Length: 354
Image (cartoon, rainbow, N blue to C red):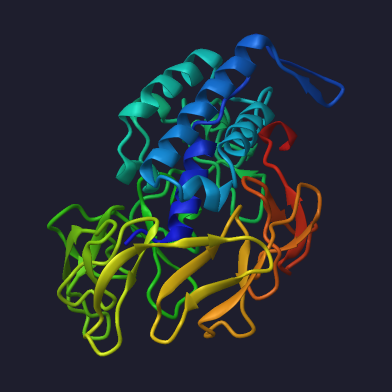
């Protein structure tokens, strides 16, 4: 089963990796960036293509869950692209962005969710050396800028390899998972396991659209990557003998049936509505639309209440027990020097990273 959080982070990384850079039609004056028609058109084309791919990979679910509407997905994705125009050392130009947009229809959903872009969308190496300030991969000669889930600026670093330490998938660059064992808060970057390969949840994860069947993390017994189920498919909540469900679906299992059930569509709810696992036994699974947070009194509670994501420039908190989160692709960025989780919703823009 594709973890929704993983899907969100991976897709966000894809947007950042393919985000447009300053071509000859952009200029920066007095701290503000002006963009030309070619840049704007390229960013809009790329945003339209990536949002269409996202919707096609989980129809009626992914767009509504992350952005609310297709129009919001396109406009906010394009803005992220435009915000990188004029960034120091950027290697991308409108021609590369248009080539990436044209290539998106050939991207598989599994590769999209696993942040493994088609070759046309791999960041063009920039001119910045290791340790230089950056905000997007295309500024760095290594094609990796070590921004975190709570920052918009960082430094150019080597492209992570399997075994590198991580806390979220963003720490692993592209085409690597952040494998975190159950109960831990950090793990290591690991290659995704293909169909039929040996897997272990939290250690050797399957590719998106696959489910690890038969593994046991207590005994460290390996399982096998098998296709995750779609609407109406047989599933098992424990994944002991039958796979789980693909993105947009949850395994709804009647009580006393060894976790056996069928894959049913995950419901989406607005702010103020109930969310989580509904019913005893569970009869439906509800998530929050437009990147809202399902806030629970206790993390172990089966249900909670949807809290709307905060707008750009508004207060936020990345702690899921507090919230609110931010509208994508904005990040909840704490004040400089803060070690807390409270901050301000900030839309990434590499041109601001000096």
